[in-house]
Length: 366
Ligand code: IPM
Ligand code: MG
Image (cartoon, rainbow, N blue to C red):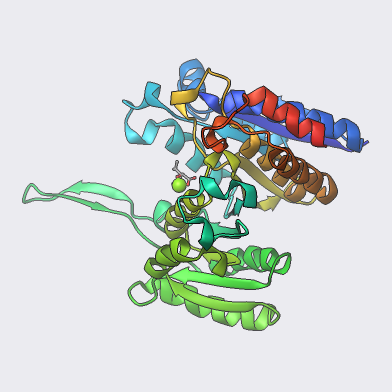
């Protein structure tokens, strides 16, 4: 029986609440599919700051290193907001994990089920069939990690800060590879988003995308769009896109906008795939809900566990190569929602269930 070795980094506030339920659902799925689960929990984020003095302790990194994938909850919240920015849970846990495991490919599906169209701020007639797009964001380059990155005092007493946007052609090509694979599993349309009218990195990005797709993926229909226009098009008509591929900072912003047009953050999953291979020869990855720790609803048992469950499905697909169980899990979430199970975030004021009952509804559909 295949054993799934993965690290469980639940994090803060609603993180552990939705993680518990996702593990319960996974457990049931594993029994149905004849899989054996070997989750190893470790502290991360604010919880790790409280217990070990830092957001990503060495002991946690060691657990991740031994695993084939990381199932991640969410980190941060008001309790640690007074710390210096560099020590805050989000920055001090997520960014080093991305860097350490070279998690360069961030896959964020933008899915809105037809029956949840009311959760979107867009008028229903713009999205009669819901939304189904995906944003592929480069995650280890660009402004986030480029050097120099510093603040200096100038002789005249002024302060000067600099971040560096830098990309190599090889970094652009490897994220294009991920985007092409995604497009091939969908409608074969890829939109590369840049700011080539202003930025040098974007000129290289556009040229690389054009040449690479022509050479390696002539079956893919490639288009280019400036990022400001892409931001506008996402609210005008999100379904004009199939797969979006873009650099780190643009992807950070556009994926939040996409999450917003898709209604509730409680339904959106994500995968961050690494350059390295796990013990199965598949991409090592970190899988996390798109939303945050939601401190305002933490402890009430009302958070939506679907994003965490769907992130576990992505883990099965990408890091364990288990396409059928992954689809089965995604199908169960969809059917649970269709059958009327709703947490408060997707209930539009109607009757709603709590976190555990939502997970029960998914289990019932497995
Ligand atoms: C995200 C988040 C992170 C990012 C923050 C928490 C550092 O916004 O995953 O999109 O900017 O990448
Ligand atoms: Mg973000």
